Every structure is written in C-alpha cells, then in structure tokens.
Image (cartoon, rainbow, N blue to C red; front, top):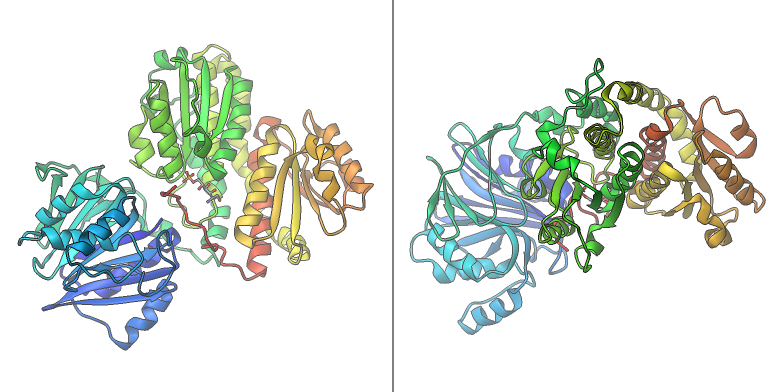
Amino acid sequence: MCGIIGYIGSKDVVPILVESLKKLEYRGYDSAGIAVVDENQVHLKRVKGKISDLEKSLKSSTPNGSFGVGHTRWATHGRPSEENAHPHRDCTDSLVVVHNGIIENYLSLKKKLTDEGHTFRTETDTEVIAHLVEKYFRGSLEKAVQQAIQELEGAYAIAVISLQDSGKIVAAKIGPPAVVGLGDGEYFVSSDLNPLLSYTQKIVFLEDEEIAVLDSQGVNFLNFQGKPIKKNADHITWSPLMVEKSGFKHFMLKEIFEQPQVVRDTLKGRISLDSGKVFLEEIGITPQALEKVKKVVIVACGTSYHAGLVAKYFIETLARIPVEIEFASEYRYRDFILDKNALVVVISQSGETADSLAALRAAKRQKPLSLAVCNVVKSSIARESDGVLYTHAGPEIGVAATKTFSAQMAALALLALYLAQIKGKIQEQASLPLIEDLQRIPHKMEKILNQAASIEELALEFVSFSHFLYLGRGINFPVALEGALKLKEISYIHAEGYPGGEMKHGPIALIDEKMPTMTVIPKDNVYEKMLSNISEIKSRVGYILAVAFEEDEEILERVDRVIPIPSANPLFTPFLTTLPLQLFAYYIAAKRGADVDQPRNLAKSVTVE
Ligand code: AGP
C-alpha cells in the first residue's frame, strides 16, 4: 500500500506535506515525492528512498505555495525509482496525481491514450490517471476527475491538483481509505488519520465512489455521478501524542510496552466486576440474533489470523460453539458453504486488508451475520460488516503488529464470554472468576515487561543464528506461530512456528546446534506433552529456550534457557507468553540493524492483493 496526503490552507505547504508523509511512511517507503503549486508553476520533488531523502533533496530548493499533494510509495507496478515515484504528471506538467491502490486496466488505458497522442514517462499504473484527467479537462478539475474515473477499473484513493484550475484539490476513493481533515481555514486529504491529528480532530471518512473537492473556503462532496452529497464529520479522540515515539527508539518497542494499557482500554466499560455481565451491545448485533448462531467462521491474515486461532479456543471452550478459522486469501477463492446460522468474524487491525475485505464480501453473498474486529474506526471492513467490535489499541505505527494482537485477544475473549452468556453456557455470576482472571492480566504483563533487560541480554546471544523453530501446543500453538512471524518479519531470520505434536512428523529432522528451538510451555493440560517434545530435541543436541511459569522448577533442568512469566489462567496465557517473543524478536532485529518499524518489502496494511 502507499500513503497520499493533500493540504490547502494559508500555511507554507511543504513542511506540512513532509511532516505528514513521515506519519504515513509506515504505509510504504521505497520512494516519495511532493507537488506544490506556486504562482504559475507546479513544482515537483521526488526521490527513490525514504522521506528523509526527500527532505534532503528539498534543502537545495524548497518550493513555496499554500497547497499541494504528497505521496510515499510501496511499489506495485514499476520498480522503486525517482521516475516511478509519485506525484505523476500529465503531458503538460500542469496536472499531477498521487494514488494509493491498483488500476487493473491500466495497460489498455495506456495504449488507448498513447494512440490518442499522450506521452507516457513511467512504468506505473498511476500515470494513466493523470492523462485521463487531462483528456477530459474542460476547465473544471472535479468534472474532469469525475469523468476520468468512469474508465478506471481497480481500487484507488487519489488526489489531483492542476494549474489550469488552481486553488483546489480533488480526491476520489474506491477501495483504499481516504479521510478528509477539516481544520481552521485549512483542509486535508490523507490515506489515514495519523498525519491529521496534529491539525484537527474533525474528520470526514470518504466512502467508496465519493469525491471530495477541497479549496480555501472548505470542502464539497460529490458522488461518482457528479451529484453533490452531504457528509457528516466525526470527532476523532486519538491524540497526536499517540502517534509519536515518546522517547522509545522504535514505535514497535513503544507499542510493545503499551500492551497492558491497551488490554485495560479494550476491556474498559465492557465488563461488570459485580455481576460478571459482559456488555457488548455496542457491536450492533442483537443478543437475539447472536443466540441463533450455531457456527463461527473467523477470517483474517497474518497476526490477526493468529488472534483468530486463539479466539477459537476462547469461543469453543466458553460458548461451546464450533469455530472454523480461515486464511482470508484462501477463503475468498474457495467455494465454501455457510449456513444461515453462521457468524463470520473478520479480524483486521487496519480494517483495510484487501484479502480480508474480499473474503467478507464473498461471505456476505450467503447472508450470514458478519462481525468485524477492527482497530481503525470506520475502516472499510468495519463499515461493511453487520457489526463491529473495536479494539481500543490506538494507532499502531510499527509495521509488525504487537499491541493490536493483545487488543484483539482481549476483544475476542470478551466476545467469547458474551456469546457464552447469551447462549446460557455460563451464568453471569459464574463468569466472575474468569473476568477477575482477565482483569489481572495487564498487571502480569507489566511484570514481564519489567524484565525486558534480561530478555534483551538473552536475545543478543542469538543475533547471528539463521534459523529458529518455535513450538507450542493448545492455545499457545498460535503464540508459537506469532513469535516466529515477529522474528522473521523484522529480523529477516527464518523462523517456523509448529504445534509441538508435529515435531515427530518432520521438523525434528532439522534439529541441530545451528537450529535453536523456542518453546512456549506454561503449566496447562499439555505441559507434559511439551516436556516430551523438549526431551526429543535435547537428545538431538538441540539448543532449547522456554517461556515458562516463574514457579516452574522442573523446566530449569530440562532446557538451556528459561524466560519466566507469572502464572495465569491457562485460557489467558497467550497474553503473557507472547510478550517475551515480541521482545526477543525486537532486540535481535534492532541489534542486527534491521529497519524495525519499516521492515523491507512489508507494508502496515496490505490493501492490494
Ligand atoms: C503482522 O505483524 C503483520 N503486520 C501482518 O501479518 C498483519 O497482521 C496482516 O497484514 C493483517 O493486517 P490487518 O490486521 O490490518 O488485516
């Protein structure tokens, strides 16, 4: 995915565009650029590289101007290069566009426009938008954009400016997100909230097939047929500080340490410590409708998929409802069968993941109930589901998901309890011990974070390893997968998560002194089984680490290194066992000099297939 930003107002636009792009950099960072209209010229500055490289190139000559657009890129069509960096121009260099998404019919459009005399300079799909708007331009930029987008197939959030109809920014959206910020005499369009929070908390979320026309007087909205529409603004409570590093070296480390508070915030106001009742009426699906649910299908990608695997244990154990968990990228293409009493739960922190959105849309054709578990208010998946359960994690800037994983587990634990109470599987009073255990989790998380220094010391012993095996069983098998994902995605060390019972079916052939194993082994119903896995590995000179309860004496004799955690209700141990694995991956990656917050080839939200 990429990040787009547009500003129009009375301030100097360049610093605003650059600072905004820094807050969008987690969306894509292989090239960047801005375009500013200054008197009778469009000034373009583009670089291959990061925003810091763009800043350096601007030092030599900084254009003036009070409106312009900017872009930070995660290349889909056309290799990362200055020429392929946005903004892209029309033939006259007087009209520019920035774009997030994919134009699927760009090749046929490019051929048609070339036959009509347009000259193309890049390999990108985006450039066809600039030439199409140029083709239809007859004096009104919004009219030209409205006509041009009729020919586009695919997904896009765009912002366009032109010298021929100066003093305005025209934005249009179908698919990837676009939000409009209403400041005091200044207006913004952005791919997400983060850049806007320093200027305004008055936000309008563009829906699919909507156009925004920003000028110095304000913002008007149209539909794709060019008809004016009325849009209401939301007041967003996220503060600018929430997107700052607050003294941490990386956003990821800050977000790891925010997890106890994030779990508290996600639980807050949704449980009663007196009656044991769970309050989730906010999700927008009635208890009567949920009472009829006979099956839950969870669909997600990446870390959110791992949260779904944990939720399978929560829901089956507490609500006694069968749960199927699916990779969204597989489910969307399968000829699946959904009965009418199914509840489809789509877990997505960004609410914009293309595969998860497509899987939701595919499922909805069979008319199940649908529930989104999202972190971003009014994101596409949230808006297109029957109901939404928000995780209150605040903006997550690090590409690697950490605090949103804990928030998702907290929200899903509540959902499982809520379903259990609605289905009469657990009486409210009988829920109290579980709720008290859940309430104790954040404090236990803090105890683990307090030993971060010893986890760092241990991690540094493994900086030069090239392979890792992560093992867990039961509700901690998803934690083994998540721990392996963290290590591979930020340190680039190959790591595999496996259920402990699968060792004998192949992976044990890998074990040698160059392949350490991280085991997740709290005292639960599969503890003894995990111990036998450890013995199998030990007898093959494998190096073993274990995340285990601090009072567990036996494990100390069985493995090479132990990371102790406080004991907890077995159902809630993933909140605790995950933290050391996040820190372990973080410290290794940081020591290896990897770009922890913006790992190579990754994007925070995969809004393209
Ligand atoms: C996890 O660290 C990654 N950032 C990635 O796997 C992510 O979880 C996945 O792309 C799903 O994103 P979503 O939750 O926004 O849908």
